[in-house]
Image 1 (tube, rainbow, N blue to C red):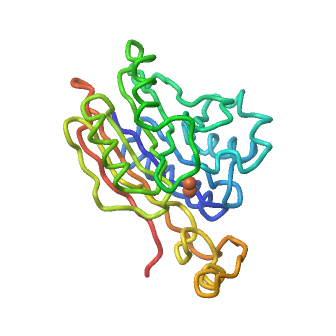
Image 2: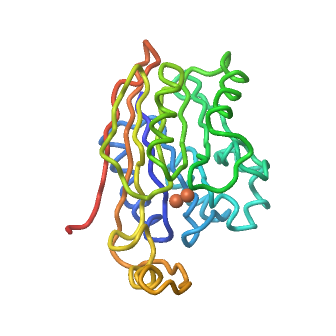
Length: 259
Ligand SMILES: [Fe+2]
Ligand SMILES: [Fe+2]
């Protein structure tokens, strides 16, 4: 079984990259299920109902979020009915679902979204104890755990992946918007510290370069205006061995303009 995971979609350029390239990636890689981090999909922060439906209609099977989950208040108008959306399990408020179990090719996959603690916003509980609770509650009805671990610190994400080896089949990091090159499968768990983003390539993690430079060099509180320009798409494909139900491989994907 092959699962495609696409990193943080940042604004309209990120959405356009997904709409343009998803059908081809799905066909070429023979993808069975597609999960997308959409925490920055609506103009760089949050998710709207319209964009939720746009991404689902484009072939995304499940959306995850992050620290920007509630940046658009209107999410509370549809989060309870959005059955293809997973919000961070350990973040308040707790409307909607912190994990969802879906059946794919006869296997029950539990998609989990968790926020890390280091350099992040306050959470209800650590991602470690949250994941232990989820496994305890769902073990009997789940074949494969897929975790979108949303955090700043690579150390915390790497530690998490070792802690849940053999129990959680996939741990993919999100939030930094920069793809790391440390993908591996270790004791049945596929892992990467960060999948990277879908957004404007020549930018500072999706935002306008000049404004960010002004902020860093003068300390002035500039706006985080969205960058404009050609897009990058960042993703991974994870293969699960259907006999052992363990991860078999993880492959990075980046589609970007010439540097
Ligand atoms: Fe984030
Ligand atoms: Fe993000």
